[in-house]
Length: 121
Image (cartoon, rainbow, N blue to C red; front, side, top):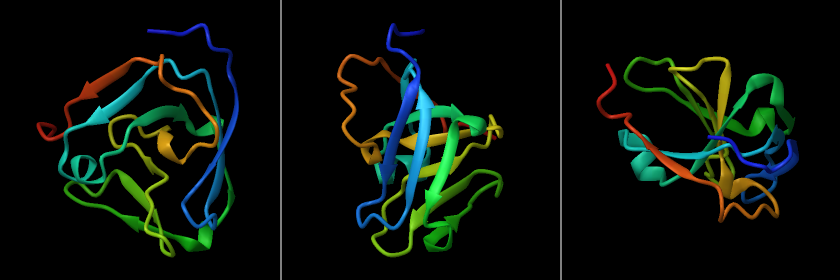
């Protein structure tokens, strides 16, 4: 499913601003996930290829959390606790971005697809 939105650069951050990043996307879709961590963090994500992701600041401020297969890498700001992104398990060359950390983006017309995470092996 694609959108007529042009690909462009968007910037985002955690709540305290220590972690800053940028992505390039046209927001083809947003996703939710029903795995144990995604349900608890209640994030809505956009998937971008790692070449369309740039960590601008805060690498040393990030805390990493892994569970189950220890493949997906979930990152949190160690100052404010916000989850800005994660390295994906099923598509390892991609980053899942918490869209609520992006600055000034209207995503009201972007479709949201629910993904199944808790049934994954």
